[in-house]
Structure formats: C-alpha cells, structure tokens
Length: 147
Image (cartoon, rainbow, N blue to C red; front, side):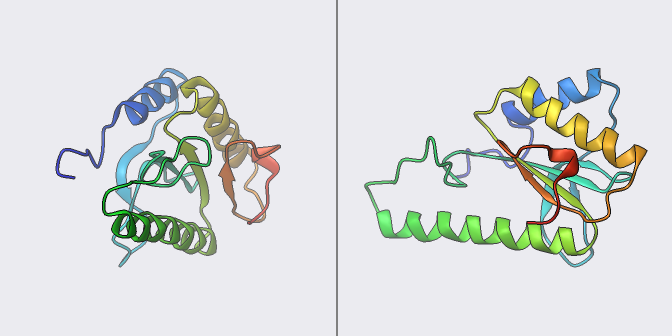
C-alpha cells in the first residue's frame, strides 16, 4: 500500500486544475477540525466547503468496486472501515457547519468541477441555512439540506 498516494492523485490534480481555471482558490490536503486527524482533498475555508475525491476501490464505489479474492476478510473490513470513517467525517463536518462534497475518482472532472463551483458560488452569495453532504447524482447540490 506504500505505492498508493495519499494526495496529488491524477483525479485530484485534474479537478484542482479546472477549479483554478474558473478562478476558485482553495487549500489542498487541509485539516478542518481541531483534534480530527483527517484531511479534505480540496478546501474552501471562507465558504466552509470540503471536497473529498474518493477512490473507487478504497471507498467501495457502487459502479466499479470489485472485492478482493485474496485475504478477502481483511480487505472487506478495511474498506468497510473506510466507509464508516467517511460517514463519521461527513457528520462531524456537517455538525460543525461545513458542506461536504464527495466525488468518485471515475467522475468526469468537468462535471465534478461544475458541482463544486455551483456549491461554492451559492455558499459565497447566500450562506445556506443547513450544511450538507453532496454526492454525484444529487438533484440540486446548492439547495441540498443535511443528509
């Protein structure tokens, strides 16, 4: 697992490039809450928006996940733990007033950038009353309330 990058993966770099071209400025791989040893891939502190780009295998993408055949119990527990930690992180951030956007690594970067931009532009023009978690396929990400 040492060869698996924790940051600056190709999906992250493509998304960041598109966001930067659109004039959006952000922090990379930043901790969001004191005492929480977890980082978001792209962070917009002023808008309180955290973006996570999730790998299909490590976060069990419903479209692309294929279970391991060797040492399957270990990997199932590991991936289930990742998903549980994702849900916990989302809830902690929403409770602290953040909007969480989760993007699968296989998503089209331009569509993901559109989703992020619509949430950011909406958050900076009119602060939403309730933070939320936004995942691909959600109807109107800027109007989404907590999950």
